[in-house]
Length: 294
Image 1 (cartoon, one colour):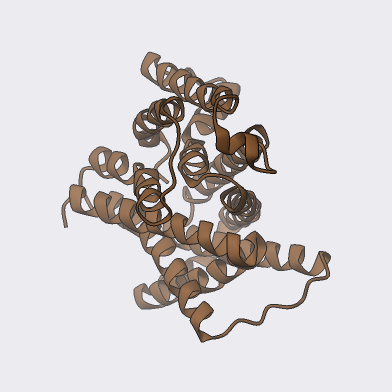
Image 2 (cartoon, rainbow, N blue to C red):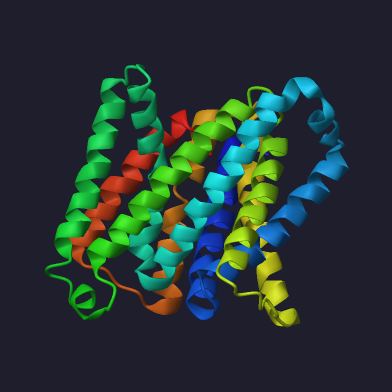
């Protein structure tokens, strides 16, 4: 498959997965929704690794650092996704999804803190994302939805931004782990230890009820498959000799798919000012994603 097709499939799968996440989180809560997705996602990636025969990487002592970074990735990723699902449950998909997808901004910001110098275009893209978020935040004063909802826009923005920051740190941990382990193995570690993290939160809240019928498990399976496949397309595609730049830029536009589904199915609308802010963010992350890969 060529890079354009792989990028489109990744964007399609991840976009639909985020839409399903929003609907599940609204119906059964963000914690239950995330547990269901992580269980099925872990299963899908486990089957893939068994088929490829790459589990042996985990049993080499020299890989302790890589495994440790993979575990850290999973813990941070789980918390980031839990916040993201919560934001999707209480906010507009068309606003929450692009902000979460802006995590490449924070990855580059962390690199700056470590002494690395960004290029002019990277700084310009970061500025565009900041402008986009500020525009969306300021638009709450003129948005009737934001004035009526019990969860004000600023609160939703804060949750979305914090989720994006945590996901960025999780991504850095993944990149460090992937220097030693295969990226597909790191992805499995992330899902497995992310699931453990969420289960611990589940137990801490003393909410042990997780009983769903076959219909819900089918939804969880579809959600987990789409999420895993979308990420695997990026990993496999960029390691298979195709054009990395084209694939990653196309895949990073997945919030457009999520927003389209919100408009088509939920009839969700956002103001012109908010559309402008979202446009700033999506254009910027399409460029910045070249430097973060997932």
